[in-house]
Image (tube, rainbow, N blue to C red; front, side, top):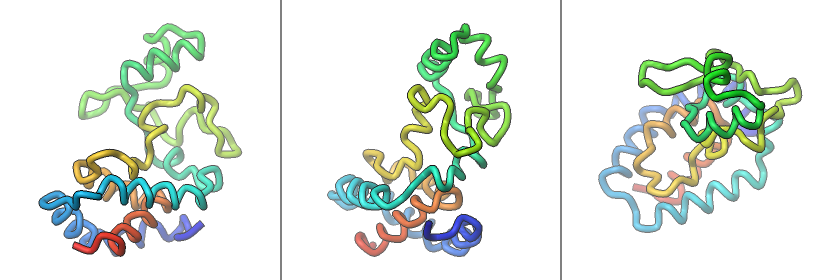
Length: 164
């Protein structure tokens, strides 16, 4: 895994100002082919990235749970939605449902997910580097490069492929 997980926070911190300036320019004038380039970069990175060897996202952050997520997961666990909420979730400062604690309750010792087939939308889409209108989530991406080596690599490659 490159960069190594134990260096990702420092590398992201070192690149933060550079990345912020890049993303500010990107927001002001996104290239017409941005979504296509991001999809290519995302696909190429995840062909060589094994998320199970890392799982840093599951160990250090918690996803947002939508109403649909809560319904789907509680049904899978054979619980009423209110039971699921009481057992696993809390409401954060943005009034969103999030996990009561991290690492994720559903993360197993081998970095697999107990609820993988019904996992929250935020988990399915992480690190969001293939999202349409990517320029709208640059603040989230700035956070994710400090968590996810794949996101870090995608942003570094993006700056080479789309110089602004």
